Image (cartoon, rainbow, N blue to C red; front, side, top):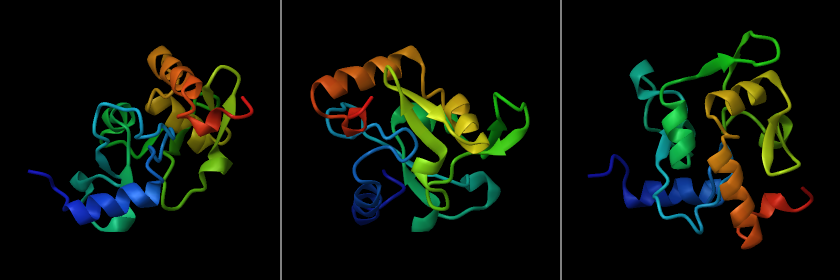
Length: 141
């Protein structure tokens, strides 16, 4: 049984543009169902309200788990993870050569590291999806 109604799930999917709100992996062309992430974990007392929910691909969801902050690989300081409701994606991330996602801010870098967004499988998946015209972010890479 799902924690979310089909209506709530549809709301989250539509708002996310049918892609992971963290790494932008599209739902189209995927075999796995994308889970709905609690941006602020339930374990902290945060609720199921729409503003606390984000569509996440299975890898991002699995790596984020209950984290809300992570070490910025450049400064070594803790930084808050990217928050899809409060933060602007294009301010925190940018695409670089080879379908690699780079963090442009401490939060972006911490999120890329924590969610392991550039592991070899994810980079290869982006490359394959781009070849099928299923990964629009690939334009200009």
